[in-house]
Length: 282
Ligand code: SIN
Image 1 (cartoon, helix red, strand yellow):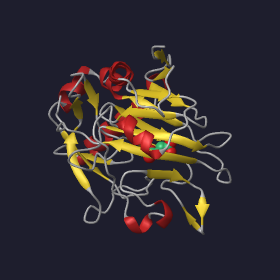
Image 2 (tube, rainbow, N blue to C red; image 1 turned 90 degrees about the horizontal axis):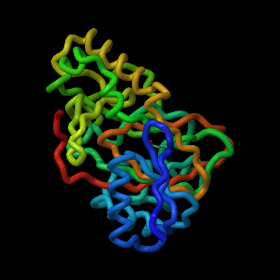
Image 3 (tube, rainbow, N blue to C red; image 1 turned 30 degrees about the vertical axis):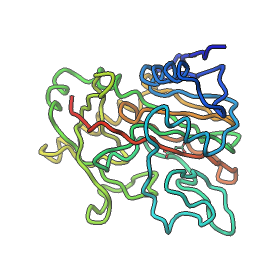
Image 4 (cartoon, helix red, strand yellow; image 1 turned 180 degrees about the horizontal axis):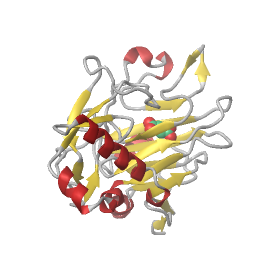
């Protein structure tokens, strides 16, 4: 049976049905899945039972598995890994086993504070709360299209500085300490290397300023963009069920997490895909 692509009917997102990803994916299906990823920006498989090895194998449809930079001293000794990061509030031996354990997470893309950010991210759900902890995705091609022509031309060729202190989920202060955290400038308007389309590439959790712009103006422009990015019309919201695997394109999407009850367990496995294209301006 051929794989089925079922669009979410929202601003992005599609389910890929009729496939068991615990087994190697035939080439023809892998091509269909890759095309759906480029078209819908975030795709998901329901009811899967997969191991970390299976998850890495699915990642290889999209590129090379990425490594991440969570400091080793913050990893749980039993679950330490360079490739598989747990996102979890589950506690074992008195220590939480995963990163970003509780609460809401602000809009962001993954690793824009590196010279070559990760191309894609996968999450696989092992345990989910009965309510909340949803992952939302905001379509940055559509946000670009919604900017006024004046703002589009003002932002053409501009870069913004992206910084991050690992573990921050909600930024309630003005600036990270740049001396001690990774940071990197990237174009505000990014040209997607495969679709050729333009996406907005700034986010409230990690972008701090538009380089070379007056401080007040940079704040105003960024806050206008941040409020557009959070508008319902640009969003697909994923309500997790156990056994979902999701993969999204960090080059043209932001993601965020909704709050959930702290006393309920949530455990997701995260593996990324590294990029072999340099970041390009639009
Ligand atoms: C993340 O953004 O790294 C985690 C998203 C989630 O927990 O849903």
